[in-house]
Image (cartoon, rainbow, N blue to C red; front, side, top):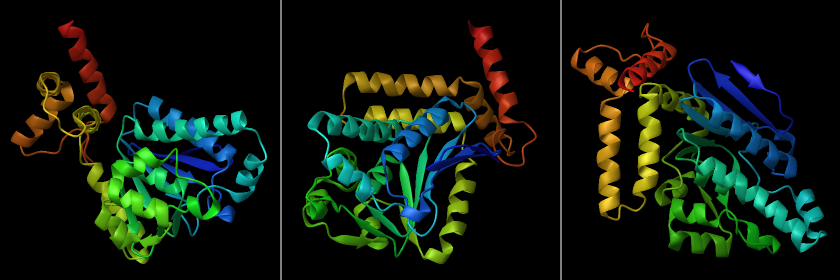
Length: 286
């Protein structure tokens, strides 16, 4: 495992080809401040530029995923002028959009509290799991604010009607309710969360890295599924491209030959060899 040095977050790369981005202010319940937001953006830039990574986990150290915004930081921001606050908002938006647009799949793992902006991070991930007793809250209205920057992502995750309820009431809800609304995919007893997370990791490692990236890009393009001639052409082109790629052909051959695919654990063909073979194929076609 390799770790990148930050102060408020930790980025750990697993040799199997995935990374975990840890919120690392456990003494502050992983509350956001300007430094953490900036470091999260920098960490996501590293993840985006690392072609060896297959997926990303987003987690929080300690008892809580994140308590939302750091109140001391918010108090300081309240004393600043509009333009300075606008700059802070743009930085937070950059974080959310960077996470939402990441090329590889993302999985949030939630325990304890996930308040305010933490729901933005969870909503920006492709998938999320949580402890059954985790506590979620769009808490902004309780302190005279609004969930402004995160609202598009929260609405996409739980729907407009539920977003209206929880943004306006600031009610807390648990993992089971979060699952019912679609914010998280599954919830588990807190004692089982780590073992279940490992099961999710093991399952994702079975999948073609290229196919997961292509599928994520495809689903972003499909959006709500409105049928248009342009979308039809895009989908036709997408399947043609991936079928003729080295990784696509390897997956089909492995399935037909009833053997392990090159990217799966236990195969003696490394992802690096597969990538080299794919580049060679590109050269021969050009």
